[in-house]
Image (spheres, rainbow, N blue to C red):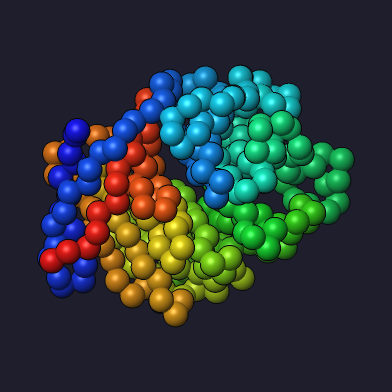
Length: 282
C-alpha cells in the first residue's frame, strides 16, 4: 500500500500525519475537473476527448457523454462539472454555455436558452458552475472575471465580484465553491475571497501559495495547487482556521481535490487516487 507523506499546520499548532492510499481508478486522457454527487457517483470532465465520464466511487466506469462539437451532448472544452443528487452541470467553455444532464448523462437543457434570451443574459467562456440547494445557478465567467447568479428558471439575478465590489472585486478568479447554500469561497490569484450569496464581502485570506481549484465539504473549503491541499474552515461566516496538507514527496500533480465522507480524492490528469482521511493528532 502506497503512502503520501503530508505536513499539517493549523494556526500556530504543528501536526503531522500520513494519508493512506486505499485505491486508484480511471484511465483518462486529460482530466481537468471532477465532482462527487451525494449518492457517491463520480463525474469527470476530460478536455482532450471532450467527454464527461461517470464512475462509481469504487472505480467502475458507468457511462460517458460528449465528443467534440457544438450540438447538444457535445463539448468544446468542458472545463468544469458539478453534480448534485439528480443532475449534472457542465461548463462548456468554448461553446459559451452550461449543459444540464440527469444523473445518467441524458441531456436535459442548456443555459443560456437561445429561445428565451429575454429572461437571461449572454455570458462568455464559463470556467466554473455551482448550483445551490435552493436552485440558484452561479457561473464564473472568465470574460469579465465575475460570477453571475441565475434563478431556477435561468433568469439572471445579479453579478458578484464585479468592478464595483471594491477590495472584494475579482481580478483573476480561477474557481469557486459554495457551502451551506449561503457562502461563496473564491480562488482569486493568491487570495481566498469569502462572499455571501448576494455578493457582500465577508473576508479575504491571503495565501502563501497559488491554488488552482477549490471545492466544498460541509463547513470546509478545500483549495489545492498541483502539490498542496489546504482546508479552510468557516465558523459564523468567518474564517476560523486553516490546515495545510503538503505532498512531502512532490510525487503527484494534483488537478483537483475533493473530500467525500472519510475519504480524500485527488484527481490527476489520468486517474483518481483515493485516500483514507487522516484523523487530527498532535
